[in-house]
Image (cartoon, rainbow, N blue to C red):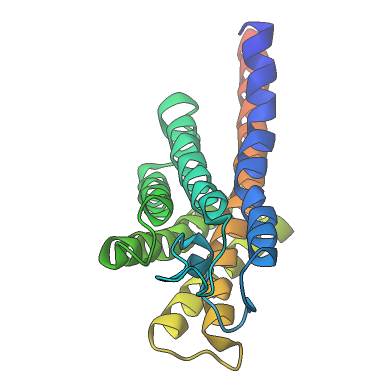
Length: 223
């Protein structure tokens, strides 16, 4: 493998991690420019992506909403890119978690491209796909690597996958558990995003394990 390709491959986990963690930075910055009091507990995440400030321009909103919408899209694209890399190119994951990741990525991009105030049905569908399938990806990936790599990261991925699904269904049935509607939505969303970050680490480690095993088999055969 050419050196520049190998170097890019080594950096891919970092690129994917940064591409999704930027969400938290952008969320914080956009919330800080909210006209009115934005509450992580009482307001939905999607409210940060609403570009409309009312007919007189004084309704609660953020002038930097485009940053939040772009952040959603970047997260979605990162998911799809990771799915292609891990299945089509590096063949490190089976089809099921990869499909879950692609669906979640499409959902994330839709959330950013269809703001909730103008395309609610489409936006809601995108959010549902992202939250459900993002957590399913985390859970199935963790179960995939568990036999070869049981350990804290795998256990954390399982926990995040389950927590994300529980958070989503609590959010859907308006069981905020004292966290507020925005808080329980964030349980689902943050679990999906952090679960992906943990899975990037797990997949990277799985690749290393398989390469080491292949080298040992090659050495044994050569001997």
